[in-house]
Structures are given as C-alpha cells and as structure tokens.
Image 1 (cartoon, rainbow, N blue to C red):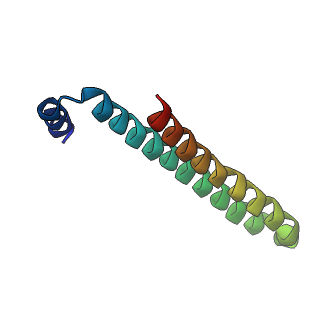
Image 2: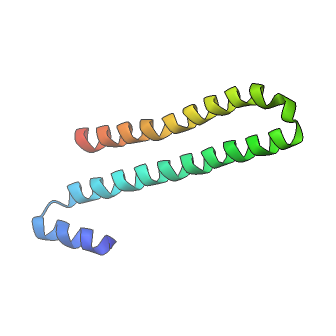
Length: 89
C-alpha cells in the first residue's frame, strides 16, 4: 500500500505532499494507538482497584474520569499538531 502512495506521488510529481500525508497519517494513528493503550490501562486499573476495595469506588471514579480526559486530550493535541505541520511545512 505504501508503494502505491509513492507511485501516485511520482506520477503527479509532488513527492513532498505525499510524504507529508504519510507522516500525518502515521502520527495520528500512533497517537490514537497510544491513547487506546492508556485508556485501557486506566479502566483496567479501575476495575482492579474497585475489586480490591469497593468502598473507594466513588473517590476513584473521579480520578478515573480525569485520567481518561487527559489521555484523550493527547490525541487531539497530536491531531492539531499534525494538521498544523502538514499545512505550514
């Protein structure tokens, strides 16, 4: 699939734009993958913590949602940064 991008870039003569598009897609994809792993870790840890001490569920739930929001924000920062780099460079 990657070779088809380079073939398309060679036919149009704009290799730099194709390289930037591939870099943007890889950056956003890896950012989303990292966030997915982080969010899975947060919720898995929450399940284990509540299973060990159910009386702390209310206190842990606020921390869980804060961690979820901050982890998800990283994806949006990566998306915005990637788009800015694609447009401005």
